[in-house]
Amino acid sequence: MISTLLQLGAGGLLMVAGKKLYWVVVGLCGAIAGLFISEFFFHPQTLGERALVAVGIGAAFAVLALVLQRIMISVAGFIAGGYLGVSLVKTLNIGVESWDWVIFLLGGLIGILIVHFLFELSLVIISSFAGASLITRAINLEGAAGLIVLLVLILAGIVIQSGQNKPKAAPPAPPAK
Image (cartoon, rainbow, N blue to C red; front, side):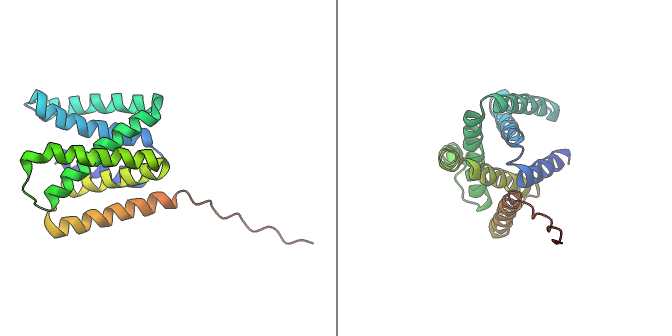
């Protein structure tokens, strides 16, 4: 239950403020990577152990993002792209579990390319994709419904974050006398 709430909260934060808080995006991507790393390499027994590894790696990624912005955003692009690739395959119920690592690598490479060529826009796109993926996984949607919700959430995140760039209208000038 707590894990689901954390995924929903992190996903929502990524979708609405990912570009402004790029270091949070990188930190959350690091935490997501930390969850997978802890399960794959350390085989933690409790949720607390998994969370400790995830928070530690996420915090390291966030600090590095402040110091090495472009490099860490590329790393986050790789992680987010890989995570999205695996999430899409699982959402579509394509049975290639033994090939998850290949899908992750391909998605990661696409994520790096997006970051490289469209830096500013890539923050919006990657954070929207990552946030939408977290939310759809948290609510456990699969199949066509899961894909539709995923795409709608991605679009919503992109629209929300893109709208944050628009300059506010200046107040009308007082009438001349």
